[in-house]
Image (cartoon, rainbow, N blue to C red; front, side, top):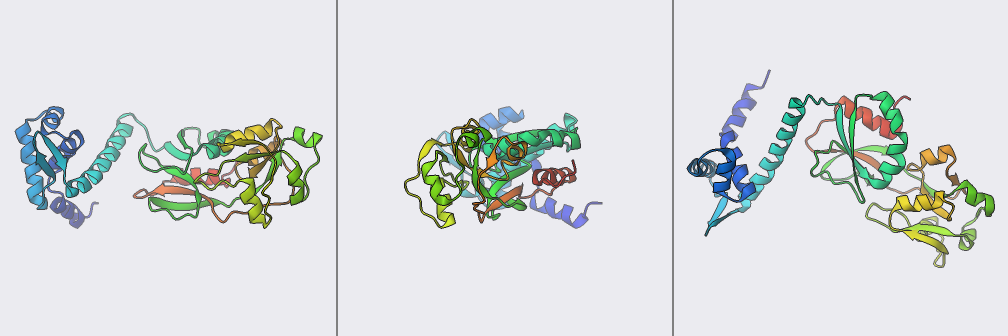
Length: 307
């Protein structure tokens, strides 16, 4: 049963949903006339609702300019909340009318995490959740929770973000990797000094915190300013593709490369390893409560789900 006090409280604080609907249309279209046309009412009716809303709140929501209107500071704050709420409600209506249940999930991650860890293991998820409709949203940098009605986002960092609740997935290890073919025709480096004389494939550093060879050696406590690079890539996925094709040695992020290391496509070269202070997390957007399906997907991402 709903809480009667809470219901009455909402009615007191939000006296007119009609006024909010018409306010959203006016703010989005920057026009009373266009809002009235969209809503199928008269301009006078729209103006009356906006005036009622302003009187109720005790503040102006629009600056009335010559042949134009503009949101006030208070109007912008209200529009930001109302617009997001309307989008969420519209999304729920669409899901219900289309018969879509909670089996639909939107997961955001970097392209590297998606291509190297999610997609190679997607068949196991299909076996565990055959009815799941998964939508992957990939971005080059840290996934943004704004827009696209994202349910979960995978991020690498310290776990402290303002736009959601972080759930730890796993820590990371970074170590040199190469293809079996490259290793068969070259001597494997055994010490930091040996890396001065081999072909290295480097990645550009990004906001996500990818290490370069120089920063990796720095973490080991060894400075190597004159390393020999055979290739430098802006995308980490290109770096790994180059290593797979035998063009040299790349830095392997162990958790991302687990499928390739397990299959033997890539080989770990030495016991030298750097363990970053940051880790991988799944972030649940603010205002969302994890559903059983979301928790199941998190277990699968972590590797804890049964196979």
